[in-house]
Image (cartoon, rainbow, N blue to C red):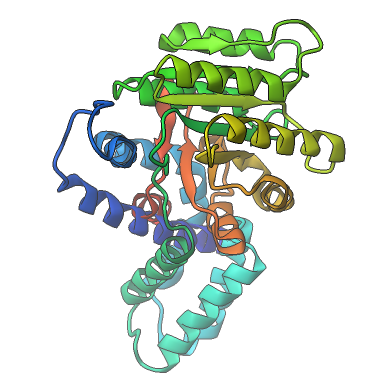
Length: 359
């Protein structure tokens, strides 16, 4: 029960942060994404978030239900809180946050900040403590997870590389991202750069057909991934595509030769479009919790990850890992997978996330 309460408290803070960002974005003027408009890519990133706003509370609330159930104990802990119970309550809160995979570093930081504010007389009720908890989590997400919108630069085509280990939902995330971009009128070209897994190209071709996108696949069994991506970006440049989405082979972060291949892929697209890729998005399986951190560190060190896609969070009670990975690496979460439907890859909203897990 103590563990459950702690878990809920941590998640609530994260959701509060996300709602603030969404609230601000709703007041932006709506626009149609036309390739000829100035600032097309800048506006596109904002529009994607704006369009998702109508569903975000419903999807986040349902998508993080397991984490929220863990953290629900926090309300019970704080309901009859009084100053003499502070140390006991904070110890139990600590357990709850740890069970929800906020991680030791983040958990201690949050709990000690609350302890300091309580004994200084700044927090005088259970409701004030919960509000401070949510704010603390939100601050962690927003201070280190800036630029959560897609940053696609100014040159066309914008190139997005999707990287990650096998089984994390990499190709599926690419397909769902293509669906979201295509719905905004973006001309998408897919590149089947996963040349190691036999069924990978077939899987991506299904997504291309499903989303109405064109695709470049390897010609021959021995084609190199870097060659496939280079050809795709060249075609994207010549034929006026807005975005080239590049799939890559899944690999363990400990496999040196395959990690080196990622460097070759990055260099290959950069030769066609200066400063490409615009984004390198690392897909991480949310059910692995804090075990995702070593993966993220290695991928970031090798290719310089610009954003994270966290998948399968609807099936995980370890949503606190979202806060840990942002705080540890300073890389923003750009999208989260909270369901099986094609619409369930959602732009990450820190305030909505905090509200969802601590509601």
